[in-house]
Length: 225
Ligand code: SAH
Image (cartoon, rainbow, N blue to C red):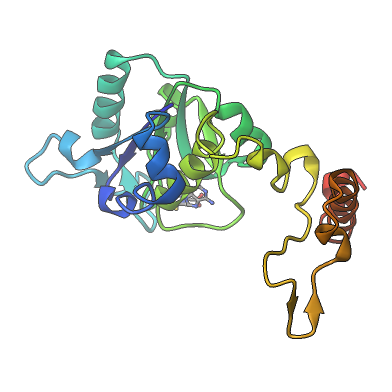
């Protein structure tokens, strides 16, 4: 899967994709992340990518021309399944969306800044608007990092243990059960007996019960309760 991220701050995105699972995903050829500096598409001498809002008011608005030039260039090179704009008023990202998007091939992510982008960009190019939660970030880069990370780890072949994503929270609308590792006893707290029993079926059953209990207590909405 290929992501093309359009941003005024590519440096902000150097880190998140160069470690651990996402780094390996790129090395194994499952994931490509290309950063595009919007300033490279600015037409005037000052490399201006924003301007004052029509109608007045606080904050700057991202101009149409550089964004259009960048998106047009990408669209002329290959076809894209989605052109995403990160925005607090978009569809709230969840595991279901991530699962579905992990099957796509090419996705553009446009990161907003300042007050956001000129509405006409959204009308002309954007096919999907994603929010990562009901709060306002100063730019779309961290949202793009969250989107690429949460989708990238689901691309078939990325996780070492193929089943591991399936037992994470939100798959099957359940939160994950408690987990433990060695030592079996620590500060007077011991690991539940069942996990040391070696009895796989009973362990699965215990984990399912724990998942249900935790979901009921913390997120009854996931169970439709
Ligand atoms: N004026 C906008 C907020 C602008 S914040 C409003 O009130 O809705 C600047 C940029 O940060 C946005 O254009 C968007 O790209 C990004 N951003 C902020 N909060 C976000 C969120 N919750 N999810 C995704 N992107 C977000």
